[in-house]
Image 1 (cartoon, rainbow, N blue to C red):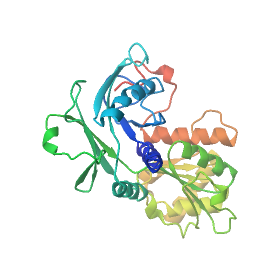
Image 2 (cartoon, rainbow, N blue to C red; image 1 turned 90 degrees about the horizontal axis):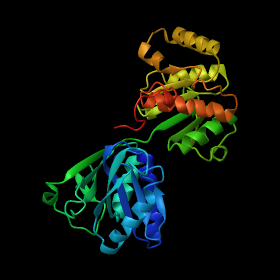
Image 3 (spheres, helix red, strand yellow; image 1 turned 45 degrees about the horizontal axis):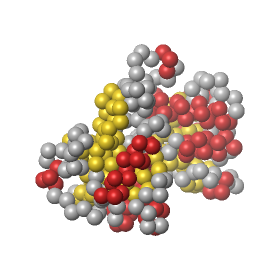
Image 4 (cartoon, rainbow, N blue to C red; image 1 turned 90 degrees about the vertical axis):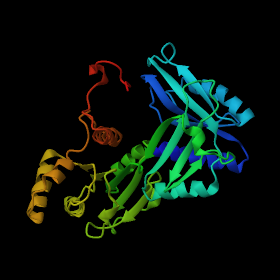
Length: 341
């Protein structure tokens, strides 16, 4: 996921400033099932610090041991991990471990793409044979240019003609926009941030709240419904109306009616939702069923939530379910593997 890769890049910059070498381990293929899927990476520093994870915690020590050879040789290598007898996931992981020395200019370009919510592509070239040493590298594509993860390596693409390729499209980070600035919004912001989401708080100009009130948020802005710029909303965005003020909620709902958000949550009772939707239809004098289908009110899954923290959990869980196109129900009802491919 993009937020995990961004965390790796930030850690790499810190290690680089301390002259500590790094390698990157990436799950490039999988036979069977596993806790994580191909494309997930972890950064290993030469001081044995690790950032990210390629499993639930069982594989990382083995990856750290295998990474020592890459530190010594500065050459990439493949490794496998058979989890059928150790992980309980009934799968075999194939990992590419390689030197990680991205140039500062490339790092700046990647960060600009992430901040501007633009997608980018990462290509991992690998082999399933452990003895293979050729055709093992990863590249990031920025516009029409490929940049190797190891800038000390002069590559020719012809040498990767026989390699297998895992191509990842890193889409914009998931974004949650919270309309409201009361205590429950603070709690929701904190939980969403832990999920790796960008969080934008929108409060009215009359609210005495600032960035200091929302330390986990990406940004805090003050805008009425009429002032809010809805163009920042894309399909990778969820919205939640929780101002605790009916008129404000209605105003913001009017402002976002033409957006392409994947989820719009309405805090409050069923009766409040019905009144809000009815007043919205009267004021807009139109019936956009696609927009109405995006509305989730009361927001959240029915888990018996009572406290602000439980309500935040309920809302975030519903957003994840909508984002992944899943109908939430207990995992014990599933037949087969949880993490089957």
